[in-house]
Length: 222
Image (cartoon, rainbow, N blue to C red; front, side):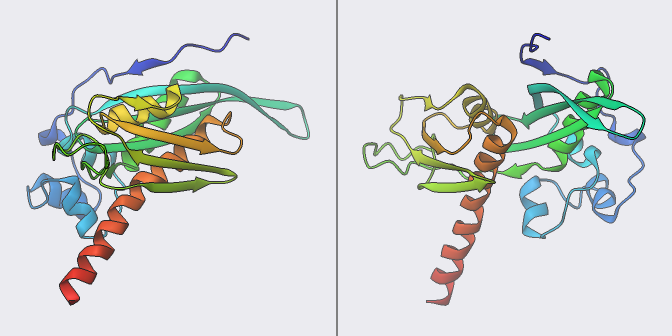
């Protein structure tokens, strides 16, 4: 079966916050405008459990289908076949997420993966950390970060302005959806597994926030 090409996925109906009835306390805070950004949610150490929270805070978020694969599971009766879909979501302004889902129908699997990607949205820190660039603009990463998932390790390094994103197609797309312009990417392991590779990138981008928080705490103590 030929592998389908990557394509964008956009919901048919736009989100209407007035018609939304939140099911969680965080959702009610978002609807009442007590929380107005994803960064506030992370500062509160709260988990996003409703997709509508992301739709309300990031109205311009875009989703891209990275991979569609057929998977099988053996049961007592026969083989059960499903489709596994990997989706990356981002607004190209410092927010990105990744999600995967399985279903017997491709459309249902895509919708589930999009929802999971939105629930996993994280903020991305920008900077100009390359020693070859002194522009001071936030076009790249503030420093080198590493991320791991299973046997795959990904290293993201700041690059000088104008270089672009040097990475494989899935990784490049994810970094572009995050809003990064110039990045060096190095990876090792079984990188043919797209989901694990993108999860390693996702963990690397998440480590930027952790390292920033640690450095800020050290500075405040001193």
